[in-house]
Amino acid sequence: MPIGSDWRSPTAYAYVSDLEPADLAWEFLRRNPAYQRDYRKAVRRPASTEELFVRRWGMPFRGRSRAKRR
Image 1 (cartoon, rainbow, N blue to C red):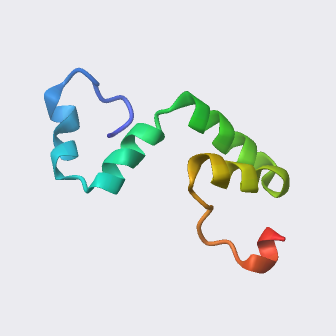
Image 2: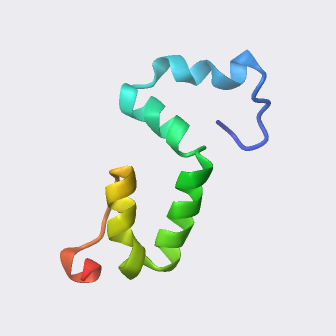
């Protein structure tokens, strides 16, 4: 949904009917305040929080090599 869209407008969410289940789950997750907080922490201090983030939310960070994660 574009930034600044009216959440009450049916047309703002018309795209939802075409989403796959995983994409729909992402739409809910990315709006979760606890997820947003944990993500910000994981990005700031990945070495100490990434594993906890993955366990809690079940989503690893993409594009990281094994050497970088160590």
